[in-house]
Image (cartoon, rainbow, N blue to C red; front, side, top):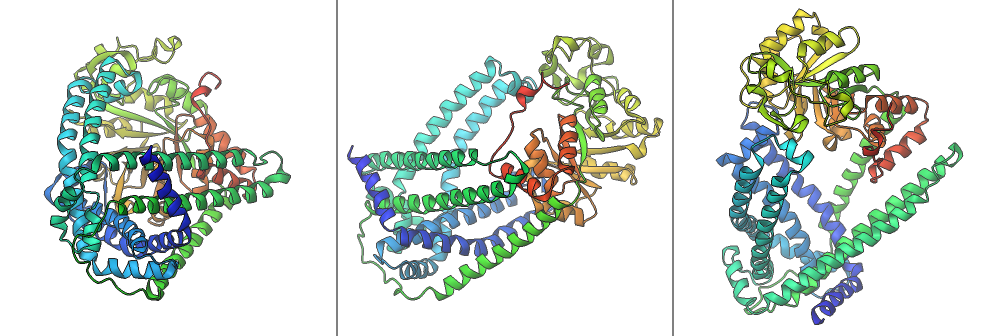
Amino acid sequence: MTTFVDVTNAYRGAWARWHVFVPVYIAVRLLLVALIAPGVAIAVNLAVSLSDQTALTDQDIAAFILSPVGFVVAIAVLSIFLLAEVLVFSVMAGSLRMGESDAWRAGSSAIRLILSRLPALFSFAARFILRVLLLILPFAAVSALIAWWTLTEYDINYYLTFQPPSFWIAVGLIGAVMLAMAWVLIRRLSAWALGLHLVLFEGVAPASAFNISANRMEGKRGRLKIELAIWLVLRLVIAGLIATVAGLLFDLVPLQGAAHLRLALIYSLIVAGLWSLAGLILAATALGALAVLLDGFFEIKTSEPPHPEPGNLRVPLLGAVGAAAVAVLIGLWLGQGLLENIQAPDRAEVIGHRGAAALRPENTMAAVEKAIEDGADWVEIDVQESADGVVIVAHDSDFMKLAGVPTKVWDATMEDVAEIDIGSWFDPEYADERTPTLRQVLEAAKGRSKVIIELKYYGHDVDLENRVTALVEEFDMQDDIATMSLKYPAVQKMKKLRPDWRAGVLAATAVGDLSGLEGEFVAVNAAMATPGLVRSVQAAGKDIYVWTVNDPLQMSAMASMGVDGLITDRPAMANEVLRVRAEMGPAERLLLWFATTFGMSVDTETMRDESP
């Protein structure tokens, strides 16, 4: 009970100093945006410069991080981000320990102290990350072995979709490993709890800070672990309460009737602003409470090195104001672009993902026909090679998810494929569906819809690109198809084979300049899409598609952003959203964009049976 009282007292103490903690927190955050962003940019540019590409995506990123140079760069980037958190916490701890009641004097003295220790703080951050990684590594290796043992017999999509017993065995075993890792981390982190204080307030060398902290925390770790757990729970509870209140206020937005749109927009902005402000105050107060808690465990054992005298915060304040001004200008610039997109007619094309995968079994002729009937501008499919050299339409490496058949695609002949029912899993009505060939899809789409062909690679392709090009040319559909792949060398190979054909890069994650990659378009995960990315890609003369967008509000938000294509399992819904948007005014469109920005969504999982 004493520990709970200590934590609540820490929160009370932090709240009593909100006039110090909140402005200092905001000022330091603004400074960090200006100071740390260049460091991250340098690290990212270094990573990209070591390749022959303008950007790294997915597999390239993983390969780079696993290389010696990539590992060092990754550690540097992580250290920069951790240093940001270290600096914020250091300012809070410094302003608390120096006992200044004036926010600017407290912030000034704390920032001066931190600047004088900056090299040591960066060294501490890098050493901290390495120590944590070394602790995590064996547990990660064991978890990877468990996953390999239990989840690699079939395609991963089968396990994620149907969650068979082996999936839950893996979840249980990996969960136990993660709990053990958490226990070890908590033990070590509680031992290192005073390391930052030692570097900051006693001038201890970063290399020695961890061991000295462990010695000083001997006999106190148990209490600290409990207090940290309570501190975290209280923070989550308060954040949950704030979100609940904000949700209740958003529910009061008057969405019905054109006359209420202006009021709804203003009301939404006010609620969103108050929510953001409350979150900011909570972050500052919780960090202050953590500083109070840890300060209670810290007693200086050596002569404290001289601290800078409190002065004015002119230089840091000017830096913060400058950073804030830059942020505002960027915000206005982005906002102006967004407003222009909101006001402009939508240019997005509708791309049926694996056909109309929400309404028919994916990558079947039924799904392809449905997408065409629903007015999709493009039908997107995945292709691989069968054992007898036929280009077939299949996404996974095997048929487990679609049919419960473990046969690998590259081991299946067309005779085998003809026996595999890939429709019943979706609905018994589609029991006659079989894996189609690319030939069948092109024949069905010719003159009715364009086709995006995603080239899938599982290390068993033989001559996929040449076989695809031969089929496309046989149907004389060069102008009605596009190819794309997660594997950038495949995109480059297609451009070399057929320079005039439309090709693009598919990316779930990326660093660097996507617009500089070869191809006529990029297709990115919707979570990656930003107004800045959209503008940069389009400024390079390329199109940008987003996937997989099934929520009508998100469809509207992506259209407002100005994307060129919506890759969706629901092409009919996407067309309807674009039709309705065409009849809306700017205020209504902006309201839809805000609704998505602040987390509103529509559950489309229940729509399958309701869709025509």
